[in-house]
Amino acid sequence: MKKSLLILLAVVAVLVIWGVTSYNGLVSMSENVNNQWANVETQYQRRSDLIPNLVNTVKGYATHERETLEQVIAARSRATQITIDPDNLTPEALAQYQQAQAGVTSALGRLLAVAESYPDLKANQNFLELQAQLEGTENRINVARTNFNNAAREYNTAIRRFPKNIFAGMFGFRPRAYFEAQEGADQAPQVQF
Image 1 (cartoon, rainbow, N blue to C red):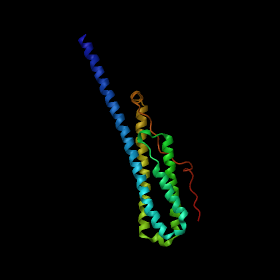
Image 2 (image 1 turned 45 degrees about the vertical axis):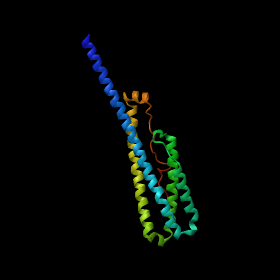
Image 3 (image 1 turned 120 degrees about the vertical axis):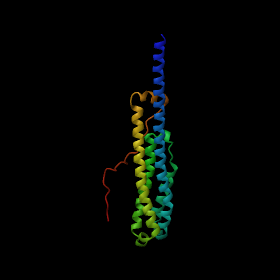
């Protein structure tokens, strides 16, 4: 009787240890997704912080391009108003966030196209530096989004695999949404001069 009780206690202890390590692993993965999301937001914030400087630099050269400048400012304002709780990264919330950021990207593209019309502006050191920082930030955004998607994939895979899916369901671990390409991104843009 004592031997079977010891075996039963050993099996229960192994199951408890396995359960605790599984749960803690899922928590760590969830926190990694949250961290990667924070990195994405940081890079978008960096871009938002650069925009006023870029707009002011262009404004001095292109005073009659007010509509384009106002579109950039409005897009930035809309994008900074949308926040997402990392624990509630639903596909809908992420799509709304991406749409606002796409508006900023589009407005910045128009702003940089306006800048092409002003040779003095293109030669301005402040403008060149801001443009280089903006390009670097766009690259950082891409890297941060890729890292986020990788962390979300790892987490989503873990919570769907047996037997961790049992713990995930019991403790409320839900799948995280991914950043996806904007509609029409598979088509090459048309450049017209």
